[in-house]
Amino acid sequence: MKFEIMRDRLLAGLNDVMKAVSSKTTIPILTGIKIDITNEGMSLTGSDADITIQTFIPVEDNGEQLMTISQTGSIVLQAKMFNEIIRKLPTNDVEIEVSNGSATHIRSGKSDFHLIGIDAAEYPLLPEISADRQFSIPADLLKSIIRETVFAVATSESRPVLTGVNWKIQGDELICVATDSHRLARRTVKLEQLPTEVNSVVIPGKSLNELNKILEDTTNPVQIVITNQQVLFKTEDVLFFSRLLEGNYPDTSRLIPEDYKTNVTINGKFLLQAIDRASLLAREDRNNVVRFETLENNIVEVSSNSPEIGKVEEQIQVEGLEGESLKISFSAKYMMEALKAIDGQDVVIQFTGAMRPFILRSVHDNAILQLILPVRTY
Picture (cartoon, rainbow, N blue to C red):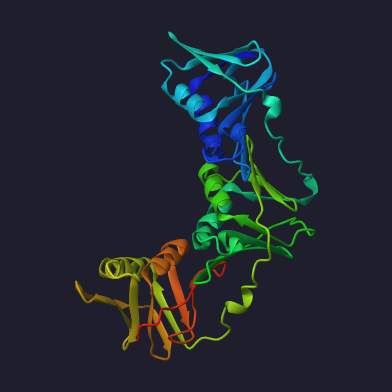
């Protein structure tokens, strides 16, 4: 195997696949990156058995020559070391040659590295995925869906299925739900040509976070293929495989209240900033709890106190206040993350009482819903 490549393009590809490589893996070969050279270009593959990322660098792109291939072949190189070497090479021209089976030479300028590779035949094969259960989502919409839900997954492994986001297909809607049993984030999106054979899968939150780092903020379609154990996200030059979580995701639809006693319409950005300020004192207290109270004349008060430090109160003029008066306490962190997901738009907050879950939605759009369980303080 022998080829030359532009260092910056190789680094960009490595940057993607390194996201799947873990030093903690129990399978030694997975600490490596697999390099496949064909006459069309170069494939780089990294995996930790849960996530597999493969990226492709073509020989030429838009008329620009990126690679010169003298001899095709495959090798696995220790990922961390290979990445560091490429990062620190002196010029943008890199030559890589494998001789005598696994002796790998990396040359650039006056630098010449010798690495011992591993036979690529030992590297696990990519999962076989049939194309009949596939649909597509524009990359920027997929990024939004991830951003608006993934923060609410559970971080504790006590119920592994809650560490993922539940993707459910109902008719022409994709419903994405995450919950850690203290709060819930739901995003609904209407799509064309959704597969009918798949109705519910759970994608690990960790996988979606890594996918989000790779996706570009464009309207280019991302093909999504779902099987019983895997999901594949496919862009023009990246394949991103993730295993699915096993187990039944709880039915969260019954958690969402049907009727409300108090409705508050408020500027999401102002509320976020007020809670951020109140949480300065709340943070010192172990629970990070902020209080919220409705007053007369369309005013709400956000407050927090810490016996050792002091207290803060802030009144906000709201755009609408209907129903019963209310005092409620909640986690500042949960509320701020929910408001960030709705992204500074005007929000309507719907309460069913001081100790019942409450809902946040955008005034303009029902697609995003956030639910938070209050904290007992009063």
